[in-house]
Image 1 (cartoon, rainbow, N blue to C red):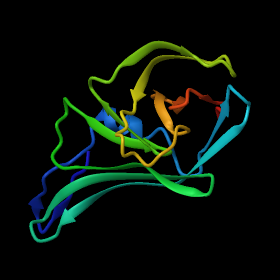
Image 2 (image 1 turned 180 degrees about the horizontal axis):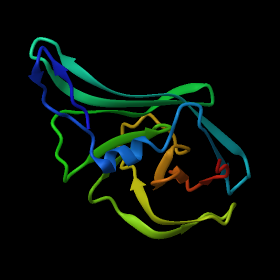
Image 3 (image 1 turned 90 degrees about the vertical axis):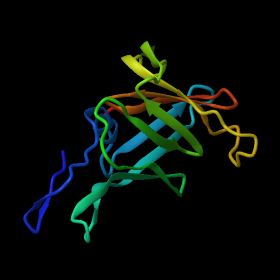
Image 4 (image 1 turned 90 degrees about the horizontal axis):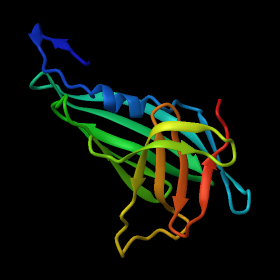
Length: 176
């Protein structure tokens, strides 16, 4: 919860919900995410290069305007933004989060499908209540068939597995 006092006035609170913070707190700066292809055993690495959770103020009205989070990562020498998300007044009962991985965009909300059990082939690790997110790409999408179509998100580890549009399966192999 974010509160701020200025000039002796109470300032409106804007906060992320507990559910939203669970998504944002999965990754920290310098986290290393290593995925391996089940097809040819190639590895793909992403590094979290920055994380910032902040609020923007309206200095004239002495109130918070929006609460924001930015998490950026680098993969194959290209910089990406995973979360570039801001919101105004909080609705504690609902959340809606947009995030991207590689060249695909996904949406998380209260109605997102969860899988009771997901077992990774390479590490034999199992996960309960994993979010299964599907990217519905438009015809004019500039990406390739190597981009993720389906992402599996665990609340503790973030992206644990993804499947590309061409059907290649990539599983996370580092768990530190």
